[in-house]
Image 1 (spheres, rainbow, N blue to C red):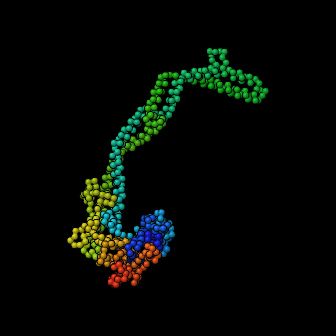
Image 2: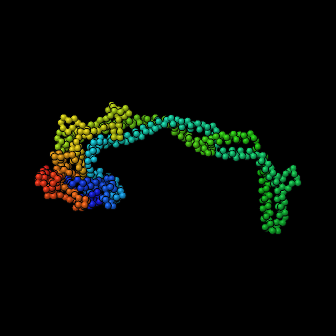
Image 3: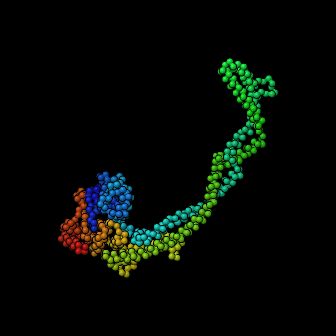
Length: 572
């Protein structure tokens, strides 16, 4: 990896051994930045506070060997990355403003792609992971991971049934709790629909009746106007001396007809006059018919106004006009059908819920059986590893139990609580020595014991669910003496089948490394390119002496350092 402008690191190159690499140095020298850098390459959260003060951005570049045809290689190729001789180039840039960019095999990719690769390539463990192991959820996850397909299969089915059960139960609860509101809404809709049905309005009826009411209300004035207009056009039989428009127009037409043969333009006017005469006759006839047909019946007017009042009662409640009232009725009828069907829907959902609870119970039992079977094997394997980590008499076990709950599901003849991951409460127990009762590791394990339990768990995983690289950040905290030597020996053994990188303060652990890297600051407090060096020969003895006694030139410390190295080589 090349690290630039990250924390105390100005510009440094970290070359990791294929086997066991130990990263050492004074407290605060920047060892953890190595872990942080790898975390960024693996899609970790980009924190702008990591950018070195005065720099525009922090950059981490890495070269990762990826087995051809592996899931990681296939995922990288899907993202458009290019692999060169099985090597993948990865880079991550974090700006001081907080923007983050990722590149994989020369292609810009979402940071999430790096996270997906991380699951296949590296297992990272730090002191926070030790604390995480204290949580029951992490202990259950560890057991499920060890069990593999035996748990993954029923867990997938269980999770799907659980999600559906939650959705169905929520809908039943909503329909049930809102039953009174729904009943009130249904009553209001029925009342409105009955009221509209009693009136039986027709589309556009309100407009038609308004026009008719206007006509009936002014019948006398309309009849008088029609009569006067008719008399003006066609004459009044009772007034023989009056001259009407039809007579005058007819006279004008006859005068023009008499001379039309002498001038074509005048002949055209004569034709138009004839048209006017015909039009006047038609209008006069329609006026006569209008006056005769006009209904001035007050009873009809009263009936129209009564009908309009009924329609107005509907438009006041259900819409601006009859068209809107009829639209409301159509929508309300559909809504009423939906509300009336809720009781049937509740019955259907309740039956589905009961069926799902039965399915869930069966899947939960399968999960419990798989976990119980795997728990014994997992505990035995971890216990065996603890024996090689200076805990020969320790015994690890798992408690897989359930809590009774009357609202739960029936498993094994008992009604127990259930959740998204089954009905089991998984707890990792430790009996550190003979005669000691097994106690939850959250209560009964010291810091050193917890470190070794976690390392033992990882070693077991390495045999069942391996990854190419393991990174441990001071997981040997709280350990010393012989236990530290055994941890170093076990890490060296793990490194025979995987790459192991350890950030450590313990010389007993560092002595077993195939390569030891020293991180040290310059006088100005930064780590430069030359600040990460590979220790060999005398330089490595000097660093181990410092780690042992805090004094690089102590003869006793040097002798002890040489002894540690010799013992580690002999063990290899």
